[in-house]
Length: 83
Image 1: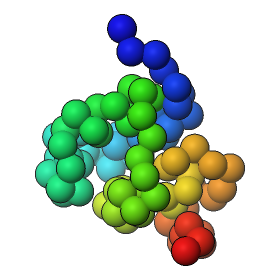
Image 2 (image 1 turned 30 degrees about the vertical axis):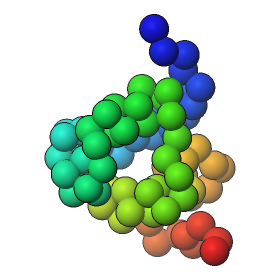
Image 3 (image 1 turned 90 degrees about the vertical axis):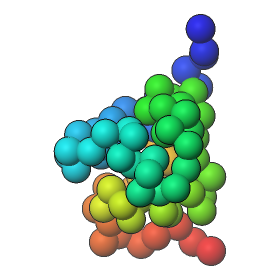
Image 4 (image 1 turned 180 degrees about the vertical axis):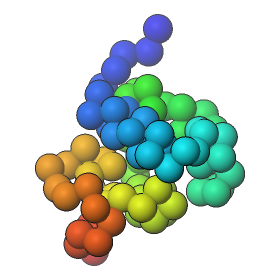
């Protein structure tokens, strides 16, 4: 059994997927990443890298920093991660 290391990330991924009426498979296809990666994010066993979080955040219309578990606004209109 995998250890949950990023519970906030998992919770936020599930919330964003639910709000967008999107499956993990659909997100994986749109983001062009493996379904196993999306599954790990949703289970809280892994956290996406910044560049991947930005892509996924745009698809899910949420702030990538929020998606990665940082204290920030959820709204995609908020400032994206600093370069």
